[in-house]
Amino acid sequence: MLDRVFDIIKDEDAILFVGAGLSIGAGLPSADGLRDALIQKMPASMLEELGGLASVKYKNLTHLAEDIFLLEGNKQLLLRTVREVVLEKATNNEAHELLARIPQFKYIVTTNYDTLIEDNNKQLEVVRNSDQLALAGINKQLLFKIHGDFTVPNDIVLTTTDYNNFLAKKQQSIFWNTVKVKLASHHIIFIGYSLDDTNVTPLIDSIMEELGDLHKNIYFVSPEVPKPKEQYLKRKGIKHIVSYGEDFLRAVVEDLKKNYIPNLKKKVYSKDMIHKVSADYDIGLTLDLANNNIVGFSSLGDKELEGRFNLSIKGTIDELDQIHRKLKGEDFEDVILTPEMLQSFGFSINNLCIHDIEELKAFRISPSPKYEGIVDFIFEGGLEIDDLDIVLFASQITEYKKKYKIVLFETFSLVIEITIAENNRLEFSLTLDILKDIKKTNIATTFYGMLNRFFQNEKFCVLNKDGDEIYNYNLNNNFKGDPMEINVLVDYFSGLQKVEQFFKIRFRNIKIKDIDYRKLKNVLDYIDDKETAYKIEDINVGKLDRKTIVNLVSVPNEPIYSLGWMDKEDTVVIFHEQEFNLGVKNYIIKDAYIVNRQELMKSSTEELIVRSSTNKLYSFFTKK
Image 1 (spheres, rainbow, N blue to C red):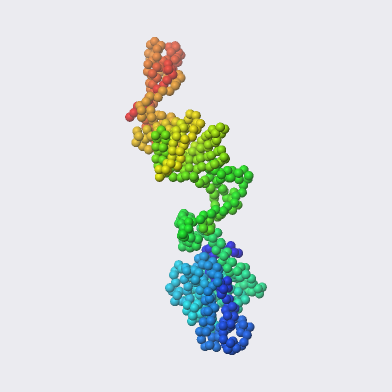
Image 2: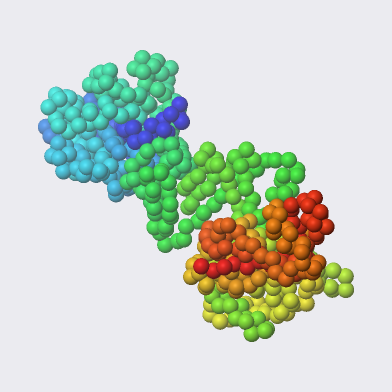
């Protein structure tokens, strides 16, 4: 039942009806306590006139107040005495401070005369009568004091006559009719009332009679209710919440802390209310209500925001061992936990829960970089690369093994593992990953050029944006040659830059999988007017007419110095999302001779087969 009540409160669909019991913890008396205080403070002569043992005779504060009023002829003594008792300084405001943290109670109704509710919640606007109702703020949290308070002493409902007048006039009262509408349209939660108080059941009966069948659920918060009174609640259809008032409010605040913000994915709450909840924890939120998302946080207090994750995971021994190794930084990979792997999860800021396990699709733990920022690289050979965006991760795997991960241009991820082997010899192991498409060719030529210098064991230093040296590389690595074929990549991207300059275009978002050395060579040959030589075997030229064959075989068997032909259509090369028309491709054998001369002479074939004496075929493009 409590979960249902909590949901009603979060939906701003509950109205709180507060009695004197909520103020008992603050050191103020209950209705019976107020009755006893009146008896103790009254003059002996008045006590005698009331019949001696007033505390035995008067079971009801209202009846006692009525008789004092009749004896005195006015309420001055009565109000003065009650004021002294009710407005004593509270000794404990915890219950009312908790209530102030629940803005979802947009309307609070109370029969209390004290000011503890409004004293502890400056956002409240107090309404005591119809005149004040007309001036009440539209979006304010309202406190209806239906029995008045000492702000307007003469309007306080205290004596039997006061109650009768209140009941007689309330049908014509805009104030009461407004309260009745709020009660009818909301679930009602009574708190701070005791069914042993003779004033309470008439109050409940009166309200239920007013509302008739037009009301939502009614709840009564009390730590215990005698059996006969329990039956009374059941007959009225009132649900009993077994709790002290202060404990109930504490549970509501705890539920708001844990569930209100995570519920944004499932519920539509007002922007104003969301900000009120977060402000209670000194958090300012930036909201994307269209998608029910929180997109930013800021501190409303003097301290920085404090975020905290709370989670527990489950899995096989191998899975947990793998997670442990990742968290140690052995591979700098993210740890991704699925909901199936999580036993519990929560993310809170300043103790306010922001995400819970129900809305979690996956939880990613990413390693924290040792350095992140803009740097300059200065190589021993004189090359300088300025304003380079770098992210560096570092991990000490064992006493003799270190691991580094360097991310450059947000594109290249280079993992370097350095192991101290025997005789203090350093062993290097490298892994290169391309994280995303390469934005521009100069990024690739810069990166691969740097890596090539590293393989060549060229020393370098790194300076931060202030010009201070943050790293100096002077180790002797043991790389032989070009272990990652970096020179080939340097040449490839340098070739792309040459194409860009010639055709006045730009390659963008280059995919490594689309690298095509043959296509690039064709375009570069076109740019350079360069012949390309291919190794060939015999070439079948095709069928020839008899006259042509006779002419060919009539000359001595010596090389035909040049045999050439061309494609029928232009060569069009498409790569890296750019298209190049290279014109007609020409082919030539510079030292061709006839292979099947005898067969042609005997007329046993009409097909001409030729061969290059150097086994070479040359091609070139005819530019338009």
